[in-house]
Length: 144
Image (tube, rainbow, N blue to C red; front, top):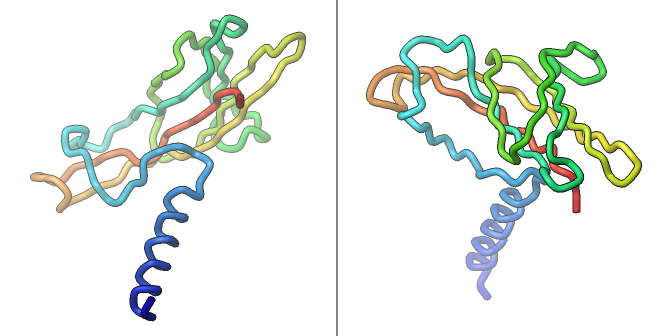
């Protein structure tokens, strides 16, 4: 194998490793904007997506949403969630932490995740200048 072919192969291998290195199973954002979810005025609220484990032992999960890190104990809201894919609106441009409480046998298990829901502005990404959201994806499922 020539040096050039070896270099190209190494580049693609490293690119593949970077794409799969994160624990979170989300699609890579390569800069694309969904213009159908773009707003002319800066939104006051935006959606976060939460993935949970719903099973016979845990048909409804107590979920606490915190402003900032969970250690700061700045609770935004607490809800009971009965679906594995849950959306809720929060104020954008904040970092949020989530805590989901599960029963596993006679024990309580807490699953924690954190992310920022950021609002961004583009003047060139869509037909008209607009605001869109980045982030806001939380995975608080139980591990198998």
